Structure formats: structure tokens, C-alpha cells
Length: 241
Image (tube, rainbow, N blue to C red; front, top):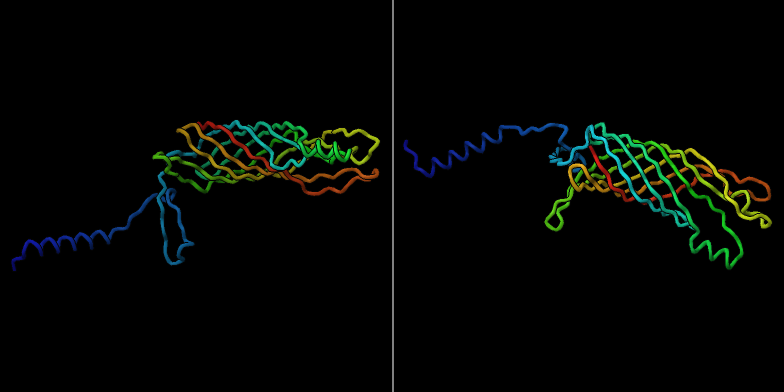
């Protein structure tokens, strides 16, 4: 039986469709992310095209920090951090913070109006090590330019150097003086790495420092220790190699 040109074309397209459906598309598992929460009975894969790789890279960052926790102090400082990515998601990072403190308007008003000085504990420096997890990688198209970024979380331990007026603040006969203290605590952070080029990037981090320390001495009786913490916003410039 002789087939018309239209029927030949139809049968050819049907054969190609059936043949294509019999093949299974595969990709490297390291480049696939499973979103099983969408439907437990189905697997949805999204292939990430990572332009900026992190595996086996060393990085260093230098930035400016501003404390968000000082009730009676204006606190700023310098942040330095360096780390190594074991793979695309996990890194080991060390950091050092140096703080500069000065009395703010709330402190001056309290001293001028009430002739009193508040209890203050302020950080002078901190350093530590943490594990960093970077599960999210994405890109934004803005002003006809694609911006790539990583979103990470960190958790670790820190040595925290502070100074406080806890020994003198409750005694009106003594001038308020600060004494140095040192504590061991925990540190947690979340942050964005915005890629400017293959090696250069901008870091935007929110870091929380937590430690256990006593309150002021009242009537020669030391206060019990409790958990305390400070939060820093950090803007930095980094280099990866």
C-alpha cells in the first residue's frame, strides 16, 4: 500500500516521539537537587549551572562591622575572616573581630538627667572557628545584569574579650571604672556572598555572639551568671583563590 506524503510525515513524528520517550535523561548527581517536598510520589530535579565554584578554594574577607545590640554604646569595628571550602556546601572558617566603643546619646542623657551610670558590658575583641554550610546558590537578573550569590549559615565557638563596670556601678561612692574580662561562648551567623567576578565577592553577614557572664555586684554580692549576647552586621570585601 502506497502512503501519502502527509501520512508518512505523521508516522515519522509518532516514531520519533515514542523513541524519545524510551530514553532516560541522566546527569551527575552532584549537580542535582531533589525537591521531594513538592510531591512525595514524584522526583523533580533542577540542574544548577554554577558559574563560581567553591570546592577546594581558600578565601579571605576584610570588612566593617556595626553592633546592633548596644543600648548605651555605639559600637563599630573591623572583621577579618578566612576559610577553606571542602566541597561546594561545607567550609571551615576562622574569624577575628576588633571593636571600638563610645558612649551614645542614651548614656549621656541618663548621666545628665539622673546623675547615674548604667551597667555596661562591651566587647573589645573576639575570635573563633566555625563550620559554614552553603546550601543555597542562586542568581538575580537586574538591570539586564545577572548577579550570582550564595546563602550560607555558620555555627562555632569563640573566645570573647570584654570589659565591664560591674564591680563599681552600684556604689555611688566609686567612680565607674571598667575591668577586662574573658569568656568562651558560641557564635552563629547567616550571610550572603555576592559574586562580583571569578575571584572577588561582597559579603553581607549577620553574626550573633553568645556567652555566659555575671551581672553587676550589688552590696558586695556578685550577681549570678546568665546567657548574654550581641549581634553584629558585617559588610566585607572578599577574595577567593
